[in-house]
Amino acid sequence: MAEVKSSTPALVDSSRDPTDIIVPDDDVDYPSDLVDNASETGSSTYSLSSSVVNYQYENGRRYHAYREGAYFAPNDEQEQARMDLLQHITRLMVGGELFLAPIGPNPGRILDLGTGTGNWAIHLADQFPKSTVIGIDLSPIQSDWAPPNCYFQVDDFESPWDFWDFSKPFDFIHAGNLAGSVKDFPHLLQQAKNTLNPGGWFEFVDFAPEPFADDDTLQGAPNLCEMSRFCNEASIKFGKKLRVTDSYKQWMIDAGFKDVKEHVYKVPMGRWPKDPKLKQIGEYHLVQMLESLEPYTLALLTRVLGWTTEEVQVLISGARSELLDRKLHMYSKLYFVYGRKDEAD
Image 1 (tube, rainbow, N blue to C red):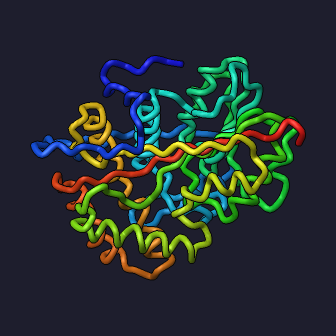
Image 2 (image 1 turned 90 degrees about the vertical axis):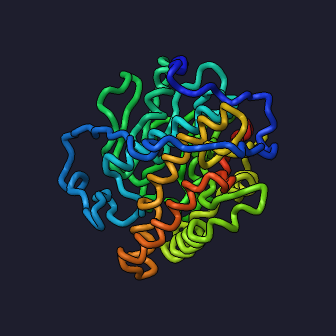
């Protein structure tokens, strides 16, 4: 695995109990340019049919064209940068690892569901140069600077026909940040299990969409809490529920996976923790949260609940102010849930 560069914050101590209460720093402040340097990233160009690259535009954001409307979040450069930042935060929380499942040193074939920018798949292909890594997404936004053992495919893994009819089974299937993008998780897990080799592993990695706090400061974030509630309500009407992370473990058990494990980490929203490592990660996560407000609300609240763009922007403005309030000790929950297909299956 490539080493984390020195410019990144130190990794979280893996010996620390991730469920511990995070001690706040009462003397925290934010640099004035904290939210002004959102990075931009370019997307690759492919020789694809117009049905794939004829993107849809709405409320100033760009959305996927293939299976139009199947997913609520945009796929433009701003969202790609946010997704890559979220991936970086995820790795920092688990000591730089790309996964937690004990997949062994030589996984033959690996499938990445909802690969997004392809960042995870590319890094995994670098880590396992003898493996074949396939990334699937609705949008062709992956880099063409990928290792020779890494491939990307524009497809819908919830397609009613033969998406899962692969020529060879997989040894590891990774499903990152799928909350709000899947209609039927139990069915997805059955399909995935059928596509795994006996003894193969499946892993969910996802952030719960609602904010949390260990004290009463969540009362000071009514807009953020309302936003989370309305978005979940809209996602249920849309048919792809957002608040699902706490169900992953039981769904995997019900699907027949063995040795199912769940790890939950607290990721601070901002620089409020006393712990210097969590403080730095919290700064990254704050920027990611600020960048996530529009992607998670615009399409859901306007398309599904009938809000006007102006009404959504008022809610976003209130939530943004709450995220920047250093007196609020909010955090996200990051879930890693994995299990093994029985050798006898």
